[in-house]
Image (tube, rainbow, N blue to C red; front, side, top):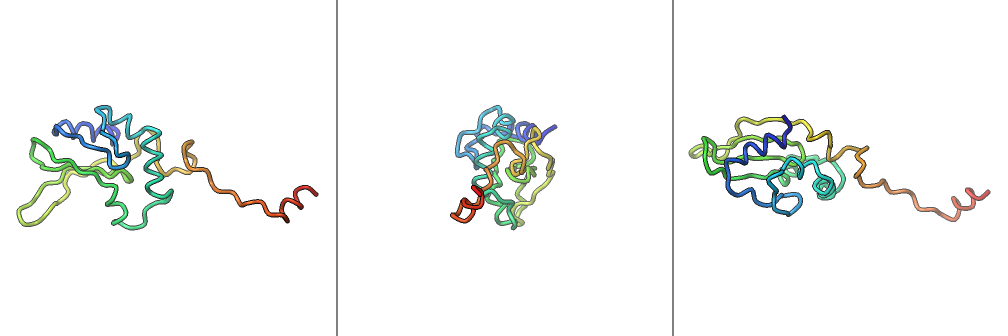
Amino acid sequence: ETPAEDLARALCCTSDWGICKVCDLELPKEIQKHLAGHNHCHKLRARLNYRVPQHSAELEAFVQRWKLDSGPHSTYFFNHVTLEQGYEKMDQGQGVAATAASSRSDISGIDPLQENDPWARPRPTAPATAASAAAASA
């Protein structure tokens, strides 16, 4: 199973899927297509400023949480960058503890930061200078 399928299964325990933290759009019931889609991956790369986060605080900005309506856990989390996900439950006086973390594999073979991704941002090229233009025409 893919991380998106795991997420869809977990979200069946909530009545409010909310807004995608990356796209600022209402999450569709076909969340697998959304997470693997061109627009989501493009917006994720843009919000990451086309670089891999270096600190856990940077990654936390891409973690989305849902309050679950039923079941033994109160919250489910999903990291849009690492695809790490799982149930969280409130321990009395202990804060949130993550449990049952699941898949970190990629969705549908699309790595949102992959260099050879067909939707990746083009690499900047050096501007032409008078010297380089003259050398090219010689």
